[in-house]
Length: 179
Image (cartoon, rainbow, N blue to C red):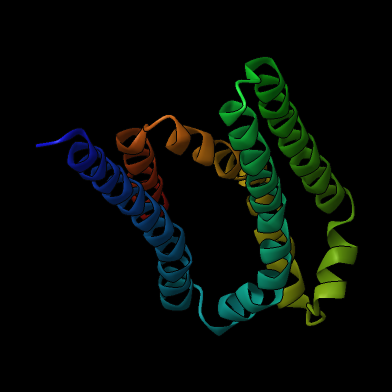
């Protein structure tokens, strides 16, 4: 096997591992809301499903925090690593973790402080749905900083080839959500 063929084989193996990691992570991210919806519809009923509908746009907005920081910083770090600028890449990595953590903590604090107003803005006006929306939001904001930091850190682990770790974390998160 010549070095060109060996390089192609290694690249294909790396690509397969990366794609498997992305697939497991995305499946885990998709299974969580499905499981939540099944349990909520079975045990809480239509009001719970209504609450999920009201809260969904806010959750999608909060997911953008980690996703945007992750995408931008990963691109910047990758180009810096390619140019051999390790110190600058470390600074961008650190800044992305601090920014992701800070923004998610601020978002969680804002929702916590203004939970009643946020619930009303989302459309929860009927008393039972309003109370349940507030409860859902309080439960959600507890995990928001961890969720955001996971979104920020995952691409860095993928860049390091830590695919098994990412797959394990994704599977554990899904199992914990189901439990």
